[in-house]
Image (cartoon, rainbow, N blue to C red; front, side, top):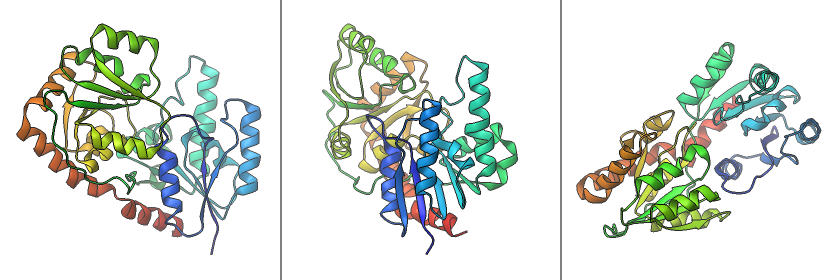
Length: 324
């Protein structure tokens, strides 16, 4: 039996759905071992240490599962599989030299040396093809699965004071516009992530009742899904969007954006809004709160949609790639 190593970036604080997925795969695929790198790779010294560490722990098949460490593809023997979750901020820099280095050592060369490339959505695959068009024939789409501990959890909708779950506080998660959109709408906003002073000021200014959680275990995230009434996901950019299928699987109605990969994943299960328009976001929340039949229709569609993203199905796809 050949040995298989799945490489992850050094763990960061906060939510890490990529890590959750990696360990789910390892528990189901024989011989697959998860290797977490020792350094974040923000410096050349850290990158060199990561390369040496990866070489020491490599297998016959080496699956690079975090885009931030794509450069490992250049230094590992055996068959290298490279997974792209998104292109994120890797090519965003004010420095021409940094953009040049990242484009070549995080995209062009790693994709060239990889035997196979997987992307978690067609949208992400299209991004990779634009950057490195010569590798298009070795790209396949393998969606992310939701964690099997998530299951349908029916509850009565709180029309008088709905609890709205918003996961993530980074710029692209669009929290500021969400806060402004909820002004004078009776609700409790459940926010997962680190709040900046600007967020806190806007919450007070717009009279939003809220609760804030950070660095909480995944089991608690599941409980927040179960206890909420609406999942707020008006993101400005996603390579996939795990909260979409986590909301679907739990049976919670979803408000989200009709941009990037999101419509591919959410299909017809969500109320779509313009994430750049506060009025559009506000009208979306009002529609979901007031229209019971519409809300139930979206929930039923979501339950069906979640079946596309089971861990069993995704595991089989990766096993086929490993064995090819």
